[in-house]
Image (cartoon, rainbow, N blue to C red; front, side, top):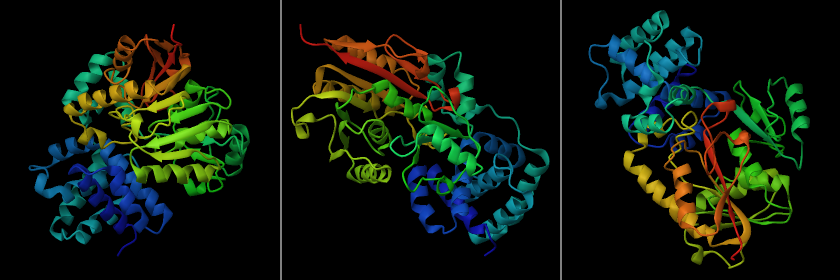
Length: 430
């Protein structure tokens, strides 16, 4: 088989599966270990993300250029065309290699009769570029309505930012290498980066770099974590030696960050999924920190809580993931309107249940990677209205747009993901 053909075949199969309802993360997790070359693995990921982020533009091209665009029965053909377009457009691969490998992938997929058509469409894309398409076209109508109601002045920027590749944010492990020291290692490795002084452990890399090429990654000197997620440690700010609960801990980046900053913390990390909890353990071990791990439903403290109150609680709640569409573009294919009400109900149950385990004088940080106010400021306002002794504590402008109860960073602001933060204080009984 011609070099590169296999990657295009796998990419088409992944995208077809995602369009039929499968998770992009799950499909890539199954496909990547079967690819030996690290460069091919990186190419597969890049193609899949680009094709899904830009599918509205590419589908507009197919409608303009084909009398009968691929239908539901032509899922692999449709996916392979998106693969080809992504290589020429967002990834800007050499046209000859992209065309040749993609056309050969059609034959490898058992579609030799369509190879000529695919070649003609890719050559047209190479000559003409792609028709303009509004970035909002990728978002379902019901979700656009919510975004534009919540963020009328910022909606256009939200759509545009969510269609762009995300930078690579790194978190230096204070136990092994402070941020400036790690930045010097990147400089020595010839990897360009920038620093945001508002993020004391963060380094931002804008050009794609394989994790295996990062200095010290295998030794736990650095982890991949978006800048918005890194700010969670600053927002929670547990006191030295505090007993801390990370209620929905997987994959463990926030637990690790807290412990990298202060090894005296006594952290219980919960997750409802034992397999995801095992990943937390692996990630903590790589960076050289320890926490108590327990597979449990955080909304049912009676099943896991020993009765000793927590000084601080982190609730990084399950949410719509509308703030991280650039990292999870399949969210826009899979999310349904009814999901939001179910998520809001779950978030409320978690808040109410976990509040009982917090000591008077302690703080709970409610965080989501959503940009919907139903899940964020309205969720927290509802909790405060029904909870005696709870109040919102102020957070500074590092955390984004202010509301009465918290702060919201929108996608792309400061190069970061969309994220909401609300720090809630529990007063002592009067």
